[in-house]
Length: 130
Length: 209
Image 1 (cartoon, each protein chain N blue to C red):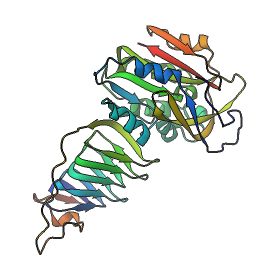
Image 2: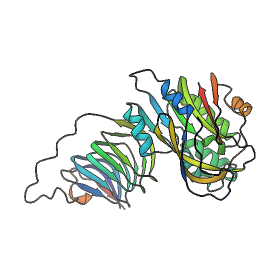
Image 3: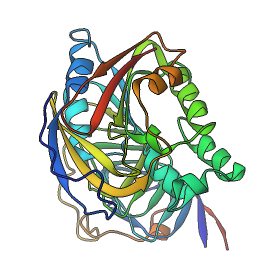
Image 4: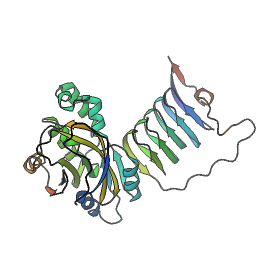
């Protein structure tokens, strides 16, 4: 199954499947899991990459590229951590702008530290293809 | 300039290792930058924390292109045999140096060119001269041992402006020995070449477009 469309998340998000389009997770952490194959532009406060991404990646705070990751695209962030073995092709733009403050502690029904599945946070109806 | 070199470059059996060496070429490249001016630098050794931290810490913009990694994907384990197939060579060219003209002030080519045979090496050098700005620099390494057939393939990690860490990733057959005359011919369209003699097995060359 491939999820196509624009994804807007208001909490930490983990993607571990196929996604095409754009993913925005402002002020939260976006995790790209080891099984993920993403063809999208990504924006978040922090992005952790274990899987495969083709697209530009922008994180206000930090981008963490793990050793099994594959990223083809441009990076814009304040800080980058990359493990030996990770594959990266693209440009790196380090912006020294101030890191936006973390959001206030979440309310009763939100678990800011618990990654939510992709399908639960789509703001625009994605087209799903099998 | 005379760095320590722990690995045996003529040992056909690859033994992963890391060693540090002084690099006059690297020092001279970074010393040539105008003060307080951000440079656009291409690192062809594949992304590493050391190089990213060093280069971006100085305020420069870094692009990464793991050319050896692309060779592995396109040519398999035998680079020389693999690149003989026209389809493999074209696939390699389609994935390598896909940047606009005059994109970079500096290209850190390292030792990748040693594993390319004609005509592919000429095509890649043509692309390098296209993506580096006029007056820009390329830092290129060649193994200086005339008798070695299999040579180490390294990832180069910048420790500081004068020192590199060489982390061996494999040992491969190079396409040919590259004496100075051969290097001059390969870069005949460049504005100038500067050779650095070193005590270890690496010859460093700064090419100015």
